Image (cartoon, rainbow, N blue to C red):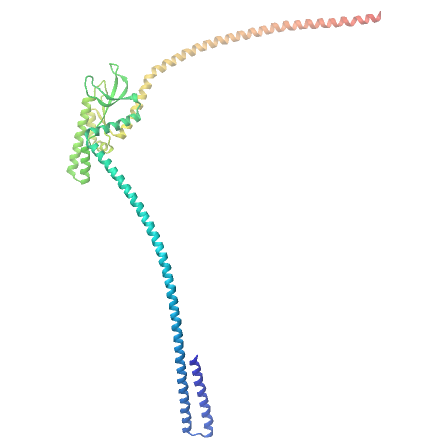
Amino acid sequence: MIVYLLLALILVLCIVILFLLAQRGDEGVSRGQLREEFMASRQELASGLRDSRMELQESLQHIRLSVEDRLNALQQHNERKLEEMRMTVDDRLHETLEKRLSESFNQVSERLRTVHEGLGEMKTLAAGVGDLKKVLSNVKTRGILGEMQLQALLSSLLSPDQYDENVATRPGSREQVEFALRLPGKDEGGRPVYLPIDAKFPLEAYYRLLDARDAGEIEAIKKAEREIELEIRRCARDISEKYLNPPHTTDFGILFLPIEGLFAEVVRNTVQLETLQRDFGIVITGPTTLGALLNSLQMGFRTLAIQERTSEVWKVLAEVKREFSTFGSVLEKAQSRISQASSEIDRLVGVRTRQIQKSLQGIEGRLESGNGEKGGGPGEDQAR
């Protein structure tokens, strides 16, 4: 605003000077006087400008100080607000961080506890696997496991009177098959005919085959497959020589493999299966196929039982037919007697009805005649 005032003042002075110059020109004022007056005016103007500049400097200094004070106050206010915000943010951050850390610590503790429990279970499982490995490494205990699995299958699919345990199929021999199915019918001596079933567990050769396949060794794979083939052939020969004894048993037996993987590996060799059936009369089964085989045998047993009962059924039907004929004759006699009784009743009802009607008519006539005689007597008395 001061600058505007100075400019206005300068403009006024210029106008005054021009006005004076115009008046003095008319009066013929000399150039020197005009110069002196102009110099004086310029000095006055310079003095005024200097004073204005000093005032302006003072005003600017005052404004600068005021602005500095305002800036300092604003800076202090901002610093105070920033400090408050920083403290608030620090508090919030500390609270959130502490909460998150606490939650994370709890989660980590829970996970560690779960991992610790899992490690304990894994240790227990590892111990169990170790025990199972020890059991499976022992031929005797491994055979017991196979027998237990076979017994579980038989007991779940057959009734107890359809199979026996530890059966001596050869008279005079001490060899006993683990399980034998009782077939319908008897042999010449009246003894039951059995179907031998024996469980085998050639696990070492199977494990060697799996290890060779994992390693990708072709020669080791072929060698392990050959070992399994020879072991299965030996087991089939053992069952055939020890337990097959027609007519006390069937002419074939069942070799049960408790592991599905081992069974799948054996049945891949179809030529060996045919050879075992042809040379030794042995059928290879696994946990799944044995169940299907037992179900089919169960259906066969039922069919045979029905065939054996057919003659008895015909006898019962003949007896029923004979009884029905007797029942028909008895019904005919009863019907004739009922007809005779009905005719007797009809005849008796007709005769007696007519007699009763005649008796009633006679009584009615007598009553009417009696009423007539009583009516004539009073008339005569009146006449007299």
